[in-house]
Length: 162
Image (tube, rainbow, N blue to C red):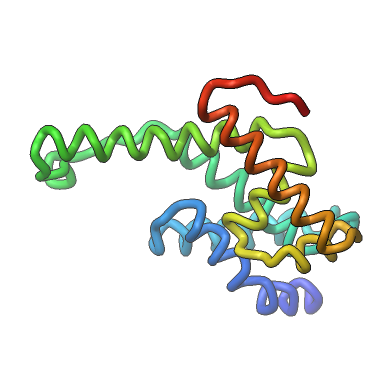
């Protein structure tokens, strides 16, 4: 258990920042970070070191975030937005676009999905991503660029070649 505690201290900020970028909410990121480490603790003995611990943890965090997004939300009258009708519609459309982009990102083939997620939400450098995959930085740059291009085409409703 000592190894797990050490890993928690080392990777906590990486997971929290990843979830903050993914969710846009410090409160939600904190809650999901705690849940990520709880889930990781439950599964720690099954971790086989086939990837970096940070990649494994961010994968757990990503799945928790997607599960959170799929949950039906209830809004009380006190929490209802006080924006004008037009502003409120714009806000909903922006949120719909973000959720659509996340869904489309999730549909990308590997390694594009993982590289775009690590770069965009995990804020990892190309060099760090390359090291995670055991590839050169150049590979990470090209893979990120291609993955991003695929995502843009999907957002436009076009077919993806890869």
